[in-house]
Image 1 (cartoon, helix red, strand yellow):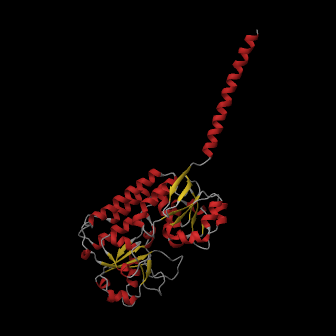
Image 2 (cartoon, rainbow, N blue to C red):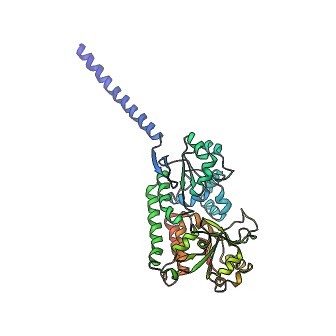
Image 3 (cartoon, rainbow, N blue to C red):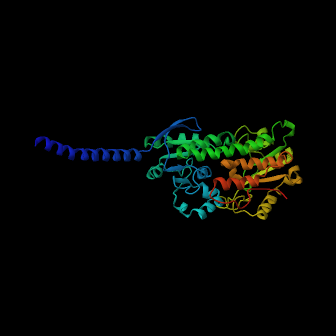
Length: 388
């Protein structure tokens, strides 16, 4: 009888024990799923940082970094963003309006002041329960001096630096791959990086063997007409200065500047008499009402762009410059200067400077393909145009 009772108890205990261990396994797995995996990365400032893998609440310290992160998720590009810098709607309303039309819920994404500005609020960032702050490398000194990095670190929020602006042709690929790891979208990041390298390689191969005297002199005016009273901001051997060199030209700014950018007086430009002129422009009607720039972007019409470009070339001294006399003036979308899509600008510059070397290159087709492969919006407007 005793043996029978013991066997009966065992029969009851075993199922209960199995249930107990099953519940333990389930709750344990749930706990592990709730805790985000951490990875260690090296950012573009050379800092080793521990970040969440597949971060769910990212702040883009500059809103225009959205140009990069949108390629990770065409269907829900705002899903992993806790907030973005307010510079995107302020300095590129065409792009912002285009995305708002496609994703109306984007209006609910919190806007914050740019991370390097006095308007950035650490308190607001922490209220959003943010996972990581992403900042452009050019703001590193300001961010460090402000104490933002240290304050956020104490609250458990890492800061990561990327670069699409200062050394874009060198730093775009590592920046995209770094963001891909943070967002947990490594495959998408690699796909874009591969496409970027293939498109840049088309230009590299085209200018291979180019002699120094075969590189035409190009004066690049940065944000021409943004302030109608100012002329002439330009680039050193950085940013659009890099783009011109990569496209087979000689950037006049490198003769005068050692930094990222600076200003030449109009008289110096007239004396140099460059055979080619590039001006960058965008729709700055929100940030700088009354500007006389070329409003390039998704909402621009060709006739309007031509009218604005002709107006810039009527400024004192410009009609006498060789580039203007020969209609060798190219207006290019300013925001390419901090976008991973800048390979399109490099192709447009190369085609313009060396049409015989790039007879088979179609930058417009490249731009269209970029949208079809990686972006959730279609092409519209004007992003570059030559003086007619």
